[in-house]
Length: 231
Length: 231
DNA sequence: TCTCATGGCGATACAGTGTATTGAGCGATA
DNA sequence: TATCGCTCAATACACTGTATCGCCATGAGA
Image (tube, rainbow over all chains, first blue to last red; front, side):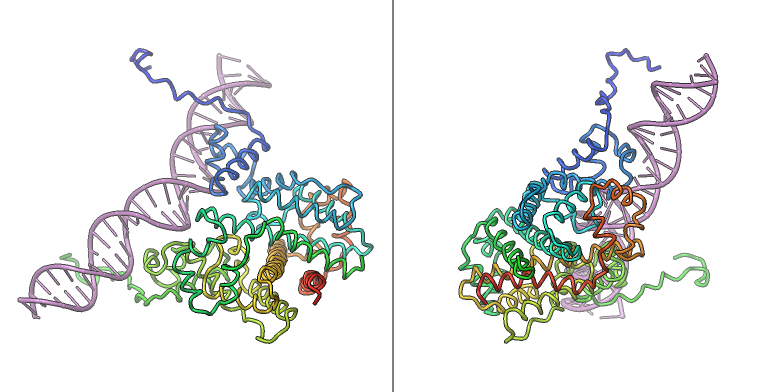
């Protein structure tokens, strides 16, 4: 209807051909965004944009944002390989622990999402199942207790490792230099003399390998289990 | 200047006398809101409203929302009483662990905030210091390792306990009945036969006391430490 | 007592969020 | 060909944290 000649009219903003979507594509896009820019970059608008789609289109595949986050979590559980079928309980649990740690390091947002709703996704369930299977005790309550304890340690350890890692990245310094980075505040606090051990930790403690620290703690837990159940 | 008679003019909306504020008042109000309605109820607008103030007024006392959350966390650390000065390492660490668990149960949002930035508030520092003090080992690296491991377990265990508690509250059912509540989905999953142990856990496992489960896991960790360091 | 300056605080504004609703366009069927 | 129905985009709404602006009340000086 416009009487301008075609050449003067701007093309319609070249609709980027609407990709066909799928739940998998959406979850993968969300994961990529989260890996690169943190959880803050996971919004319906941004995920949709990454897929050349309007935000509302996602609601055809996912009912709510929490659901999307659940799917992301389950996807990461899917990356975790179960321990070899016939491994003994100790190496089996060690395997699971390391797999979890590695997954959490690949996807730093992972640990943040674990504090929310319980995970009932298929990969999560498979993960729990295979972990339970490594502990061959008659009493199912004891099996659960052992696995829960190990998982609790793993969560906590990974969480604090990631937290520390973020703090380092934020200041661009290593743990050794952290106190200098956090400025006069920590200096003043330490100078009060109220925290002598903390002072020693920050000044004397060697910058140990994170993996080693993780293993040491894990060793405590596994040793304790061995002692208690006479393995 | 209006020529309506006074009686026809509405009174100015009776300003609720502007309470004098303080950082402490703000933090306490925020904590109360979080205790009652969860972290979602902690917004500058809502906190300010609870104090009969405009939202922007808070910025006089707190520079950013994260800062407010940090203050809330530190306040909770302040509620945690240190172990008696001369307690042995085992009962000292046990004391700390239970205190943390209790605090986290009083303030369910607490555990959610621990995953963020590291805590350098005065109460947090005092807490770490007194925990370190319970482990009397010569090597400061070993002290740190022991404390970190115990804290990691505690975080993880509390986290999963709170998560489970929330899930129960959401469905209004206990863990035993959980599978029935989560509807046909879990039934179907279990019916596939791919998760036999999970099935046993859900059907056979007795509804053990949470505190007991916590203590058992903690026992593993402490036993492991004892074994490794020959206590 | 009157005037003026200062500073604290509320109102407003903005960019972002998740999501409900609406409406347009298109493909398939009658 | 006409109509139905479905898909998706645009719009709208309530809410977030925070920057900016402007009013008003208070305190100082005349």
